Amino acid sequence: MFLGTHAPKLDDKGRVILPAKFWDELSSGLVITRGQERCLYVFSEREFENVHEKIRQAPITSKEGRDFLRLFLSGASQERPDTQHRITIPANLREYAGLGRELTVIGAGSRAEIWDTAAWNDYYATNEAGFSDTAEEVIPGLF
Image 1 (cartoon, rainbow, N blue to C red):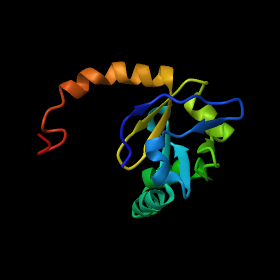
Image 2 (cartoon, rainbow, N blue to C red):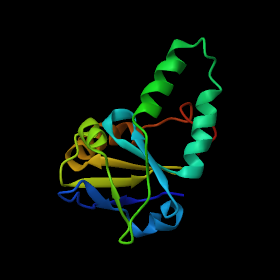
Image 3 (cartoon, rainbow, N blue to C red):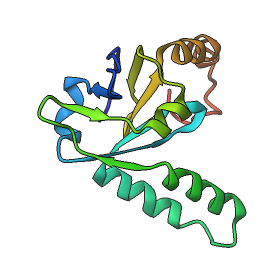
């Protein structure tokens, strides 16, 4: 499970060192793809296969399902960390997420997310109050 907030840096070659807590889960391979809110999703290969299978459940007659599948998979890149636990983020994904040198990597349960730090700070500031006010109706039975 991916947890926590981390602040790695993007190097000049578009590489980032993943947080040590994530190494075991991602060491055998991972998939990076477009996420929502202009971040990147990072899945273990196994979890990506599970997500892909769920997306494939959408009827082919569903335009929304086809659109989501196309955008999700067309941005996907299989990567394998090097011996220093770095992964290369492809240029098209760095551009999509607006990544600069300063990154924020968060654990989001079944995936990690990579954000440009300024974008993460804006997102967090905008959504923190709503998180504090989240009622039971949003996630029934949580509390």
